[in-house]
Length: 203
Image (tube, rainbow, N blue to C red):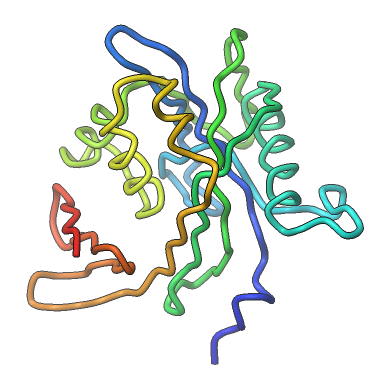
């Protein structure tokens, strides 16, 4: 029996954006080869801790505080103006189930200073370049990161990305298996992940 959604741990993560020529880049970090998301490329973030909670606050605000704190702890960058992007609810099959809120933020001018115990490597690059590295088998991505990069790749610049947020898009993840391999499905489409490169199919 899986735990009800309301009882799951909650996390916040930040998609940091900076202008580039052409377009824009996002900050991705590679996790160490241990612990959660071992070896995978992800956006900075982590679970809500007691210090992030406020009496009477709604969950997304607790997740926002966690995202700000984790971004500073992991890459040494202070962010303040976060725009909510999406809420991810994990499939019942997931060995570790955490509900995660994704936020958008313009990166500060300072260079990242990665925490050696939490970050193995960092990279600034365009969403399409990150997807290409995954498709070539060079990088490990999880579906929330892949879908976020896929959606961001449709935008031309940082301003357009930030303007697209503000209302959380809900991703209630379901796992499907077929002759074509594993797929992850949501109300608006599915991610076919049986072979590389992965492919998103809109419903």
